[in-house]
Length: 101
Image (cartoon, rainbow, N blue to C red; front, side, top):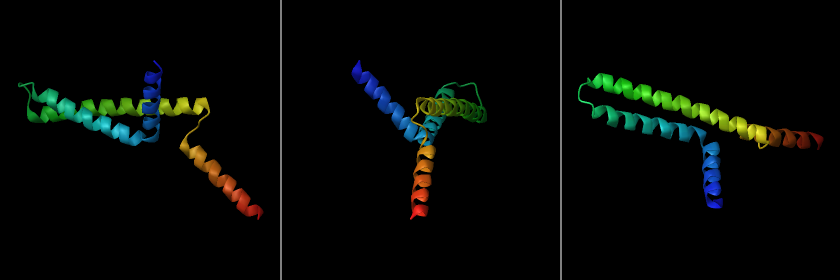
């Protein structure tokens, strides 16, 4: 069971570090999967198949963005904060120390 937590934790850390890559990958897999599914349905026009694939991928992308926002909120609540705040603290402290010299 400890291995499952570490694998889940490492996957979560990867998603936190690569949010846009994860959303883009999900969008691309949504497009490919939806086109593959719609192509197996013979009674539809090609344009309708493409439109349905885009809509399915758009819904997956919105869900991924919402999930990414939840992960960011969870990290902020846990005190780890986002990278933006970490970088801001680094630059504020370095500017303060350089002004004192």
